[in-house]
Image (cartoon, rainbow, N blue to C red; front, top):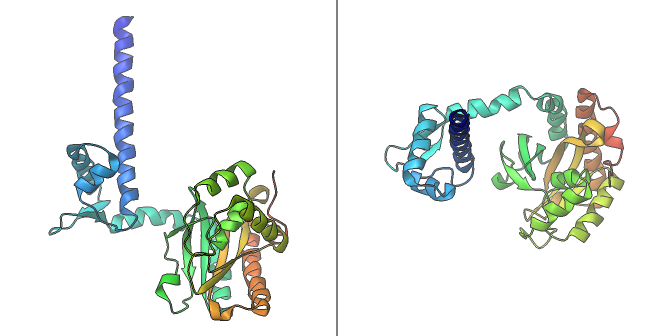
Length: 276
């Protein structure tokens, strides 16, 4: 019996070690997906808090898997094109992407700004599609860009669909002020999402980027929760009460059309469900 128990313990330990190595490999991919987008294995070891030799083995594994490459001169590691192919499988299989594609194209033709499709990803808005161009590179949401929930119009839509505990948890760590308008107060955010539920869209005026305002509406999901958000980024000179009414109508209509494609006909016209 003791021999069997020892063998079982050894097997579990090997599985745990293998799983730990796999998770560390995935963490390396996440590191390289963020700025500065390339790192030495010494940098990676420091981020993982692991020996350099272990980090080097992880990098070697990822190179062999054709997910990262090493620059011949700087010796820094970076993601390669095969990693893009793997990640883009999400879009190729995404009903959200297909449902929103043409409504977003129509919206981009109606307004002088950029149109984004965002989903919720680990307490961030992750942009998975973007069309149109306002003339300012930093206002264009590249595919794969993540933004904080509290500082974005899209994020307010997701926050409005959350239970109070999740809202409080996210706001407790949302302390960075990107501009003077960034909301970091739980009380103020609760007031803001009350307005979101009333208006059926969210607004962001220079809360993340100076010189821009954003309107966003929910693409309906199961049980009234937003499956995604369509947003419109506009230069501040386009801001006026009249334009807000007009452009908000365009954004809500695009979200309604995308919702229809997903089988949620009326979700755009209902307040985001308050499940408190």
